[in-house]
Length: 124
Image 1 (cartoon, rainbow, N blue to C red):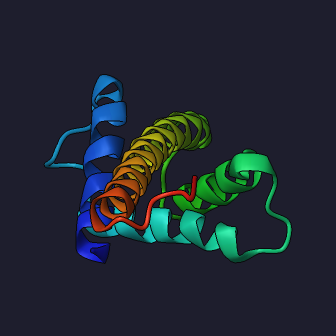
Image 2: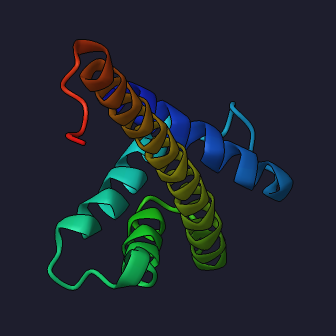
């Protein structure tokens, strides 16, 4: 799962930086891996803010500047990447909640149906 996670991070960052002149040839996977891993470690800090805004971007910017990216590009890519990642996480969470809700409704309906079929329905 971690391989897919960081592969996804690489592709999202590549799509964000394509307009800035980056391509597969000049965007090292290992630099992206180190930069995103540094930003992901910010979630373990006790200074985490609401939705990680600010903390994530600061750690992203520092990590990517240490890897040789220009300051402005590190800041812009950090905000862009984090907004895309938050949107994806929120949509995936809403989808999961919908699936769980529908599964709960089906289980409840099945339990009511089994009670009435067996004759253990509500007392009259």
